[in-house]
Image (tube, rainbow, N blue to C red; front, side):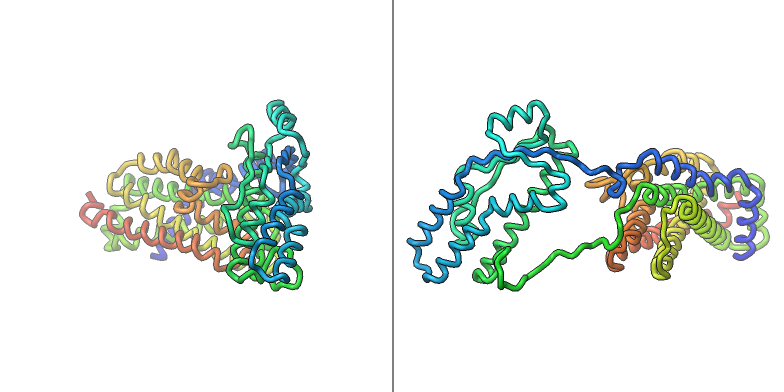
Amino acid sequence: MVSFLKKDILVLIRDKTGLLTLLLMPFVLTAILGFSLQGIMGSDSQTLSLELAIVIEDEVEQGITQFTAELDRSNLADDTKGELEAMAMSSHPLLILESMLESGQISDIVEKTEMTAEEAQKALDNEDVIAILTIPEGFTYHSLEKMLLNQGDGQTFDLTVIDYRSLGAKVISNILDNFTRSLNFETAIAHASNGNYVSGAEGNDELGGTETVSAGEPIQSLEYYTLAMAVMFALYTASSTSERALLEKKQQAFNRILLSGKHPFVYLLGKFFATFLVVCLQLLILFGLSALLFNSFTFHSIEFVAGMFLIVGIFSLCVGSVATLLTSLTLRFTSASISNVFSGGIVSLLAFAGGSFFPVSGVLQTVGEWTPNGAALTSFLLWMQGVDQSLIISPLAKVICMAILLFVISLVIFPKRREAAS
């Protein structure tokens, strides 16, 4: 197998044009996309400025008074009534909502203005605001009744937007969704613990907290496209390997290998490891140039470097399996169309689904994570953000499974000695 590996490496080195394309083209595209598309990634983007109109139809004091009157009619102990009344006055839902909107991170992007219903609708029609948050009548009373007494159906607020598909509308909607979800969760904890935990109450132990998954800085556009172009162009290496295999068969080199008594399986392994080494070299050169010229990567610890090498190695093995599959198909059908279709169309589809052109989400992200390049890109991004190592196991496991599956398929369809020699 070593002789086959040496042969494939020497053939690749002699093809200087193809080698330079594989090694330098990702770097060129990284520079173009990274600089021209600055602003779509989290750390590059300018701070959003979202105008939110708030229409308050509820009477907060009246709602607290109603709740207090209901407390007086209940069979609760006097001490409990006093505690609940104090909570209602100091932590009613509208106050919590306003505190959230005025907090540091939210207030940086959301500018709230209290308006009447008519003023808010006019501002929305004129696109002076991006959304209207309406606090309906009875909001305070019904919310307190549900939060503190676990009675009634609670209350909802209304959000009106111009276009729900817009980025600003989604941001506003997500903020309010997270607020209601957190408030409902804390209320459920309070009920489950018999009122021993209330959000914001003093003297109570916290039953949970928020842990930030990402310990590093957000991914910048140059970092993202360095990784995205690396995993995309690695797939072209697999196509290049199969094209050379077809040339060897047409020049009778493959038949001479068979006549020498070498098993075709050994020939296939040579292609596998040659592609593996080339992809490793391709990724390391791209990462090194990007780190030196663009300062895209900061190799701050041995652990970080080891993790990057591990992902590079696993992904390179998967690309090697893709190369063996294409080689088996090419040799079986003796046609260049397989490599051409893969490099001309399939790679683009895989790159699109895997997020090489732009970050993907939703269904497309789910599909992309089951492509070799998409799963590898996810692994790189997670590792770059400093997440817990356990979170990287899943995408890397997908890459390994795909590598094994593709290699097994390539062995099954690889032409037998008699078929290959014909």
